[in-house]
Amino acid sequence: MAEVTDVPPAQPRSGPRVVNLFDYWATVYRRTWRGTVISSFITPLLYALAMGVLLGKFVTAGPTSLDGASSYLAFVAPGMVCAQTMTTVFGEVTWPVMDMVKWHRVYFSMVATPLEVSDIVLGQLGFVLFRVATVSVVFLLVLAPFGVYASVGGVIGAFLVQLLLGMGFAAPIFAFTSSLRSEDGLTLLFRIGMIPLFLFSGAFFPISNLGPALEWLARVTPLWQGVDLTRMLTVGGFDAGAAAYHVAYLLVFAVGGGWLAVQRLRKRLVT
Image (cartoon, rainbow, N blue to C red; front, side):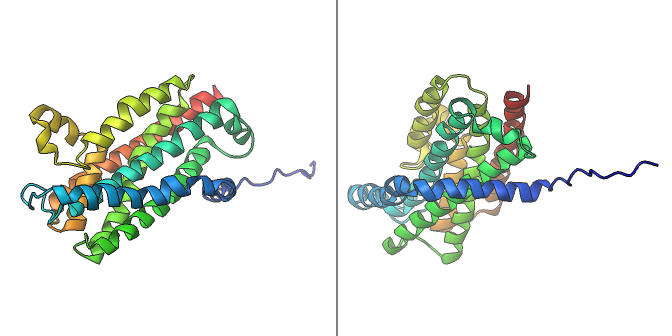
């Protein structure tokens, strides 16, 4: 009986491979973090001062008109946090993913190693989660001195909502970007996707002002789901039924988008 001398090494499980891939993103970020300081950390402070403090002086509406918020600053603060989460995600899973697929084709080199496509997707989404966490923590801390939070527990809940909201955006956008052959699609995504969401999803004014048709349209957007959930946590008036609906809605986007991202990227890299 022949003796087996060359035994292929056992492949690590998916979990450790994802951790190793996260090291790649951490190394990249250590070399590029300075370029994100203004957009991630200084912009939130400027938004809070301009929209909440300065513009808020001219808004005299009460809690009935401001979804329960006692002032316009308290109303707009959770909207700005969610909008910042969304813009951070757009920045991390559009041009960087296009770069990895089309320009520098780093994903093709990754998939030539023991890494699976699912590892690549989970590794990058994990890095996006890290970026959302750091940005939202800073934003929430910047707003704390303005006295816009009803409770500490509400702020912690708002932070967790940002993680879920971030994944609710990141996974579907990752799937969309990884299937694009031209970067022109990203331009359209920003113009007809991110900008209208930023302006008309209840971040800066109650969506009841939009009229019935546009209000219904705003309610089906993931950003409004995140804004409404964050707002009820920060200003008080927590509604368990509405919160469960928002969480389920965002989970569907995150899980469904993650599955679709793996399928789209596998089709792009393997077939």
